[in-house]
Length: 431
Image (cartoon, rainbow, N blue to C red; front, side):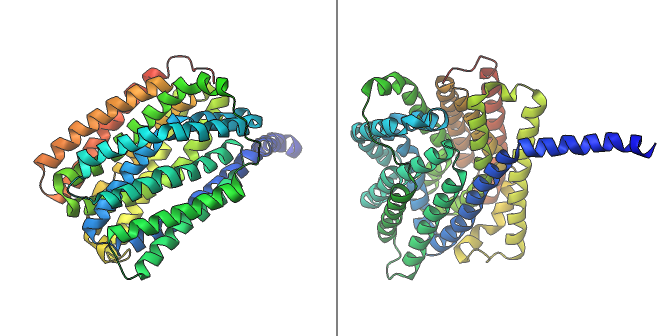
């Protein structure tokens, strides 16, 4: 009887053992990737503390807004062909050299468009507030130095080399942190001086990425392969620009409506919110890779709601923990950050809702629905512009403004959910 009663328990342990064994590589890959996210988080925090407490709050606001614009504009580079390179690394890695050559060619062809778009953005949002030389330096660093580093990360992740990608992510972020510390120790603490340090740190990251981490394959130009995928790449480029416009438009509006000092306070708060997204993006990246191979992965409502609940919970707990630390130790992150410390906890729901909007956009990319993704992100960018303009022009008090952001991001999340899951009812497109 004892042996018979032990059999169900043994079968249970056997099933658990089989489950762990078959998913050992997935677990190993996840911890390899999350180690990179953890390292990035540590060095990103060091970078943020050094920079936010060296520049004045107003100049930090100028830099953060120019950096946000640079990240958005960097998506024009190569007309979005990075997406084709990522899909190739994930599905057909033997063609990486061919698609890297295409990326370099299209990068050169995209430079006039990138320069023109950058100047238009400067005239609309930055003229009269940020010096053109500092703005141009920051956009140059983001679009032509840091974006190729992201390409090296993307290709390594696509190949499943999560450990190498994690090491590169840590080294690249550490180099930025070193640049910020050297700037802090320097004689001049202006945005113009920092922009030169920023170029140097990103250039060093670029050299490290392509000298030691990019896969070695012969570069071969095959124009017919590139033009066949150019329409999809343009959709991705457009949707990425719209995605980052939707994500960063609040900084641009705060600078243009509220001025540099308010933009600095706001940038400090949102930078702390951004830090909560680093581990979430690792999870999203691995899920996207699985969905490229199995588009029906999220066909069950329980799976979809469980993942979204987890993303929201982890993001919210991260900000709550940070808010508690800053409540009791407001100077923990420096004197400039202390001015924004009482406001951080008021944005309690913003990280979770913001990360969910980002996660939902990645689901459509994974399914090859790039045109729909671009349309959805355009609609969300327009909605965010309307909501934030209303908030910024009607709520003068900073505490109430930050509190109202919870409602703004809730409305954006609901709109994103409706658009995303309506689109996912259609069949996934072949990649």
